[in-house]
Length: 276
Length: 290
Image 1 (tube, rainbow over the protein chains, first blue to last red):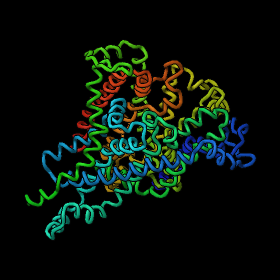
Image 2: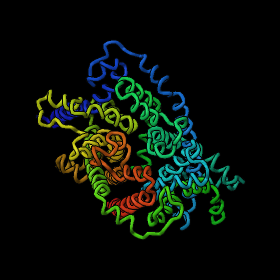
Image 3: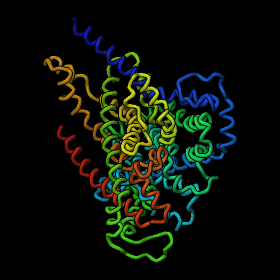
Image 4: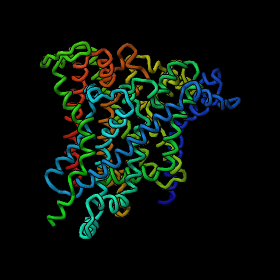
C-alpha cells in the first residue's frame, strides 16, 4: 500500500470518528431546538423526534408571559454600553502602555494583567456600589462589566498595538498632532479588527453572564435575558417547551453575532492568545 | 527621541485605570481587610478578629467539601477540556472534507450561556432522562445513574457538562496554534523518517506551547471560579454535595455573614494567585527556550 493511500485511509477513519463525536454535541442542541416547537406533553420525552405540529405560538407566549421585551432591552443596554466603555478606555490605555517603555508603564501593565487571574470580590464590590449610591441599578452593572473586562482587553490591544510601527506616530507628532489626534486618527483605524474581536468577546461574555445580575440586579425590572429565563424556569417548571423556546431566544443574539464575527473570533484568538 | 516619548500622555490611561481600580482592585484589597473582621449584615460596628474566619472555614465540613469540590471540578475540567480540545484540533487540522462544518459544530456550545446549557441538561440528566435512555438503548444499563442527585458523583457530572460546553473553545485556540506551525518542520521530519507519533511529540507539542499555556491558564482559572453551572443545575445540592467556593460565597452573602463570605473569597483569590503566577512564569520561560 502506498504512502498516500495509507494517509487517505487514515483520514477517512479520523473523519468518521469525528462525525460520530460531533453527534454528542449536536444531539442536545437538536433536542433543544425541536423541543421549543413542541407541545408541553410532547416535549417531556426530551427525544430527538420532530415536533408533530410546529408550535410557533410557544415563542409568542414566552415573549408575552415572560416579559422578555423588557429583559431584552436591558440586556442590549448593559452589553452595548459596557462594551463601548471597555473598548474606548482599554484601547486608549493600551496605546500608551505599549508606547511608553518605562518601569512605571510596565508596573501599570502588570496591575491590569492581575485582573486576568484574580477572581473579583463580590461582597465588597456590592458595598462600594452601595456607598456610591447606585446599588441595584443598570449603571452599576455596566461599570462592573467594563472593569471586569479591562484586563483581557488591555492585554489584547497592547499586543496588537506593539506591532504598529512607532514611526507612524512620530511623523504625525512632527506635523503637530496631539496624542489624542494620533490615537483617534492613526491608531484607531489600524486597530479596527481588534476592536471587532474585543467587541464580540466582551459582548458574548456579558450577554451570557448570570453571576453579576444574580448579585447586583435586585429589581426584576432591571433583569437581563438570562436572569429572566432563570425566573421563568422556576415558574414554568412543567412547560419545558416554553423554557426551551426561552433558551433559544436568549441564545439567538449571540448566535447571530457569532455568524457575523466568526473570523474576528479566530483572528483575535490567534493574535491575542497564541502569538501574544 | 526623548521628547517624542513624553508626548504619550499618561492621562489616556486614566479612564480605564479609574474604572478598573474602583470596581475591581479596591474591592479586592478591601476584602483582605474585611476577611479579618466579624462583618455582618446586622452589626454596624466591626471588630477585628484575626484568623477566626479562616479557622471557621477549615473546621466547617460544608466549607471543606466546597473547597474539595472546587478542586475536583478544576482538575477534571482542565484535563478534560484540554485533552479533548487538543485531540479535536489535531483531527480537524487534517485534510478532511467536512472539517469546516465539524469545527463549527464543536465550537458552537461555547458561544451559548452556561445558564442555557445548564437548564438544557438538567432534565436530560434525570434518572428517567435522555442520557439514561440512550445508555440503556445501547445496552449500557450498568452506567445508568441518578446523575445530579447522587451525592458521590454530582460534581463530576457538572464537570462533564462543562467539558461538553467548552472543549470546542479550547479546540479553536489549539487550531490557531497548529496553523501557525510551519509545514516545513514536518516535511523535514518525514525525510528523516520520523513517525507521526514522534513528530507529534517532538515538533507539534513544543511549538504548541503558547496555545497550551493560554488554555491551561484559562481552564484552570475558570475552573476555580466555577459558579453558574452549579448554581443552576443543583444549587449546591443534593444536601450540600455539590457546593463549591462560588456557591458558598452566595450563601454567606444571603445569610448576612459578610466577613466569612469575604474570607472565602480571599482564600479563593490567594489560591488562584498562588497557582497561576508561578505556572505563568514557568511556562513563559519554557516557551522562550524552545
